[in-house]
Image (spheres, rainbow, N blue to C red):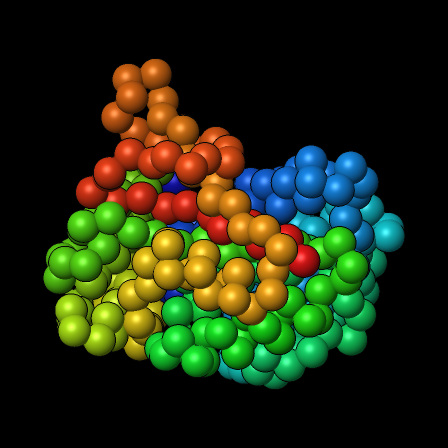
Length: 268
């Protein structure tokens, strides 16, 4: 039976996790990518801008020797995640350490895999800030560590527009609102709203004050920060060649899509 959401009864973190995140698939991608590059399993994970620690919870469930550190400056989603994502996984939650700290702070234990997902690192608006963050990450990683970030691009990512995505079970509609974009500085205000079958709306559930960053410039900054190699993992297409298939592979040639999501994998 489809859960009936309304603006008054819905939990914004539940809606976000259902509509934005694909934590299980992301963890599988991170784990497999590291194994392909290093020919061994990674064990120590760090999630920057972790929010509700959903990815961290999936990592901890991989096995008794899998540990994670989760960093976010906002205590609210950390508290929510502890109750709703960590508590349900039982003793595996003991292997997830939450820190209400700046993502630029060093790890307690050098991670094999460190990530910043959902474009969250775009909070750093200037090149010196981004370079400083990437340098700190590079220095912080274990000897054969990797750093993974996702990003979105294409012409539509620089337009002021509103995109609606109805969930498959029709329980709510996710709205990505590129509210304002300054083409001179790249600064942008991006919003997430949720709309419900009863006609109600949860407006400005999440609001982001970011700078839009491009794939080539992020690659350049990662290399300048000291990473030995940076690869782009580009999404393949389904059988009709029109939609992404959720499978990402190393590529040096991408299609000039109106909108795309890709990963950058930086090796220490």
